[in-house]
Every structure is written in structure tokens, then in C-alpha cells.
Length: 353
Image 1: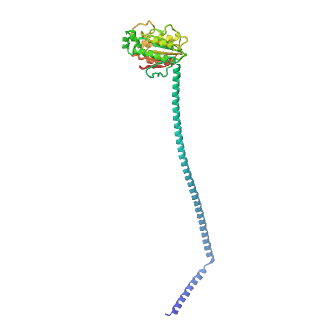
Image 2 (image 1 turned 135 degrees about the vertical axis):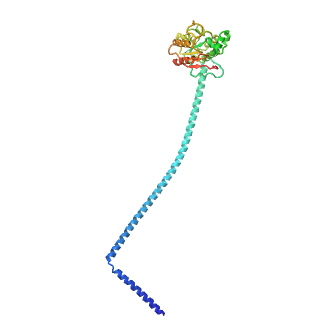
Image 3 (image 1 turned 30 degrees about the horizontal axis):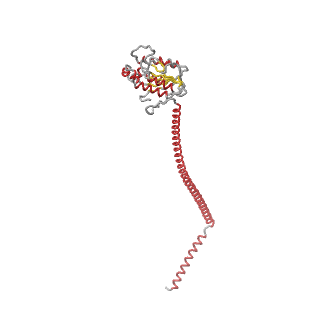
């Protein structure tokens, strides 16, 4: 085949192809234009709806993006606020701890100052008391621990049991010692302790007060003879010294008539405003002429209650009890007496004063 033949065949093929396409176009152009227009409108409407949806989606995305940004800003603010609060809390904790430590230190300082104040007041009171005492009492160590015992007053009466039972704490030794010479009786430890107690009590008398010291066994009598029913002046302490000197020479003997001791309170005019009773047990008689012999515990209680009926009202009875073997009711009976009269009751230890 020649080149011209090839070119002719190719040109014919192109012409045939265009004829076919033209035929198809003519066929399609024969379609009614209304139908094509409707489809176009439909397509345009769908495109418009999709564009609308696209705009809504974009708006939604923008709104969500804005909310996300705002949320992130709020989260950042909250985190910053939390950090700020943490720092403030740490500072507050430090300040609070410092305040607590300061308060505790102040409380400790206040406590120390109060203790120092009490100590200084006690020292000042001791100096004042030492300066106001007309007598001094020197014992074995610091024995002034009768807390609650009222020693002061304007008229002070001391009643000292000088019966034979004051010779010892045990009944057997009492029976043995009461038959010894008077010098041996005066050296009895129990009696010497009672005298030392009166010595200590007299050292606490206020200088401007008045006093009286009575001993009692089957009868009651003043230590200073001739001073019956008379109040003695403490003053410079000379009469007190003389009363203590004579009390040391008083020999314990006979029974215990507590009624006679209480009658002293009513015989003094004006009456005492403070009574200190030194005894070792319940009474063994109720009159100087009581029959000798064994006295039961019930009888001693009866003598005791009979004796306290003679007590005038309003006079406190402070009791120092020197316990004796076998007299088990004495402690409770004398405690009740002290309680009922507004006084105090103490059982004296062996090493006081």
C-alpha cells in the first residue's frame, strides 16, 4: 500500500466517526426541552440544598471551634485560679502554723509568768507572815503542810487533851506508862508531839488576836492559872511563851471528859471565833465523878454525842486527831463534828510538826 492509500483510509475513518457523533447529537437534541429544564432545576435545587447544608455545617464547625476556644480559655483560667489558690493555701498554712506556734509560745509564757507570780506571791506572803508572827517555830524540815486548817481569828481557843491516853498510841503502853513517874510521862512521844503541835499553832497567831489554851482530862482548866474565862492578848508573845512552857510541864493523867472541854467554849465571853481541839479518841466519862472501870465503845459514843449538845452554834471546831489503838469510831465521829460546825478535821502523822 502506498502512503496515499493510508492517508485516505485514515481520513475516511475520521469522517465516519464525526458522522456517528453528529447522528447521536441530533438524536439527543430531539429530547423535549421541558424535561431537560426540570432536571436542571432539580439539580440546581439539590446543589443549593447541599450548599445550604455545607454552610450550616461550616457554621456549626465554627461555633464548635469557638466553644472549644472558650472552653480552653476557661480551663486555662480555672487552672490558673487553682494554682493561685494552692499558693494562697500554702501561704495560709505557713501563716497559720506560725500563728499556732506563736499562740502556744504565748500560752507557755503566760503559764510561766503565772507560776512565777504565784511563787513571788507565796514568797511575799511568807515574808509578811514571818514579819507579823510574834513567835517562831523551828521543826525538823518543812512541816507546815496543814492545808485547810484555819489558825487565824480574833479569839482563838485551843483545847488540849491531857488524859492518860495521850501517853501512847497503844493501850498496853498507856497502862504501863500511867504508873511511871511524872518525868517519864512528860517524855512520852505522843504527849511531846501534842505539845509541839500547840507550839506550832501558837506561832501562827495574828499579833492583834487574843487566845486561850485549856487542857482537859476529867476536868478542864487553863494552862495559865488564874486566867479562867479570860482572853489573853497575843501581843509581843510573852504570854504565849509562858503558856507553852507550862503546857510542857503538864502531866497527862486520868480519863477524858469532853463535856467539860466543850463547856469552856460557852464560858468565855465573848465566845471564840475559832476552836482547835487536840484529842486522841472519844471521851471515857461525862462528869468528873465518873466511876472507874472499862468503858465500851457504845458508851464512849454516847458520851461524845452528849458532850456536843453543849456546843454553842456558829463556832467552827477544827480537830487534830492523834489516833489511838482500838478507838475506831473516833475518826468518823470527829469528822462529822468538824463538818457540822464548819471546821476541819485532820489525822496527825507521826512526824508532824
